[in-house]
Length: 271
Image (tube, rainbow, N blue to C red):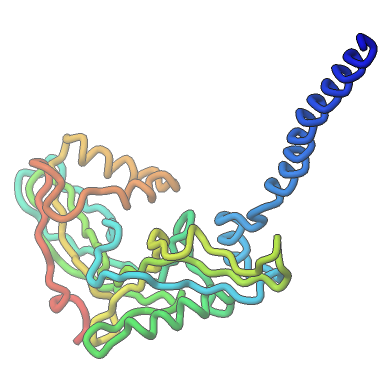
């Protein structure tokens, strides 16, 4: 009898060991399956679409919402006229030049050729938002605005022209279809289906074909930090200074040292 009890106890321990090991083995199988899921990440989808990868069957931008008359970056579009130390206003001739084109904003803004899959999709979406009331640039072709104009620079000020173009802001997401299935699927989205975090900016044009937007003459008091920053950027001509131009405050938001006067486009654009 004692021998029988020991044998029964030994079998019971074996069963307990088996029950403990079984879940561990199952977990070991599940881990590699999970690591293979989601082969095409949102970033990879964007990269493949930008590069027009051979792996893609198609790549399209799906619009979710839009906003007309959205203003673009504040850009300095003329050389700076320096009237520092002069106690009277001085007439100066400004050479103004700017251009606009369609921009697709993914991880960073870029202009893409209409010949690639994503570009074709965006071009077609542009047709949807181009109307008889609002004409837009649908591709990467640049549209220019250039003119010379004489204006008065205030005493002891610098002056230059600022510009912010009008655009139709279409937001949505990317749908990419791959030629070969990855983890059992061929369709992936970036950043996600139904998202409105990616943007395509279609610049709006006047009826004469020139860019539409806000144009203004900016006078800045000499000797102020605002004037010094502009003069330093103008003199350096570096990439950093070009970026600084785009971060200037908008119309009427420059502070006490800055005077902005809006110029109607009817005064400078050909009719």
